[in-house]
Image (cartoon, rainbow, N blue to C red; front, side, top):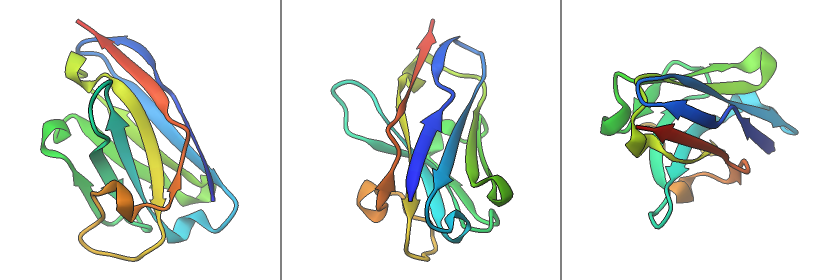
Length: 125
């Protein structure tokens, strides 16, 4: 599976951004997908995840109520809608695919096998 993340950019605090993760290769609709982020000097951290069907989602506490993960399996795409952005959301955002069916959804980077290249999101104050 090859993943391509896009949609990053510069946005003012309070603004919105939608990230996309497009997959190619193996049957994307079979895999859970997670979004992670990594700020300079920090470890990669979990942001959100969605099950293969879209029926289950999970979010880290700091983005609950502001970010929404969704997927369109017909388009092999997972989205991360980010609203009410804060400067502390600034990071490189990565999407990743988990080959193992698990509930609760994976929240650790080691649980994900395929990774996209990342897209930079910068939130200015």
